[in-house]
Image 1 (cartoon, one colour):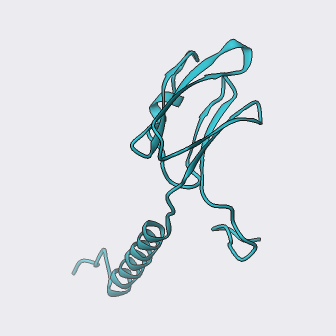
Image 2 (tube, rainbow, N blue to C red):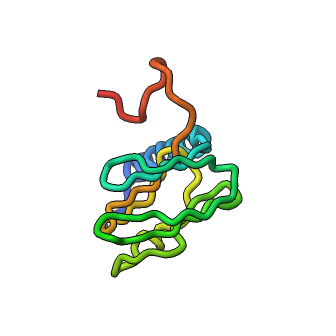
Length: 128
């Protein structure tokens, strides 16, 4: 007689873990907020702020003479061109939700989506 590989308790555990995963996924999907502004920083200093609902093309002058081309269209922001050697910032895709950002380390550029100012009653996902 052979031993069972998966027992009844293992199936219960897998079901509970799958249920928790589904609950977390739906919670994250339904609590995401769309942003309304794009904030551009270079070397930690805010350089420019743009509304997310207005199509714009802006050349960011990064640190050390580098440059990035920010494009805002259809409520999304992305970097179309970059002078950095690896172009990782260009492959980060389009962003539109609060908290999403694109970072170009060689040029010290950060493009971040922000929303309405938070009140004292709002909390982050992690509260210490």
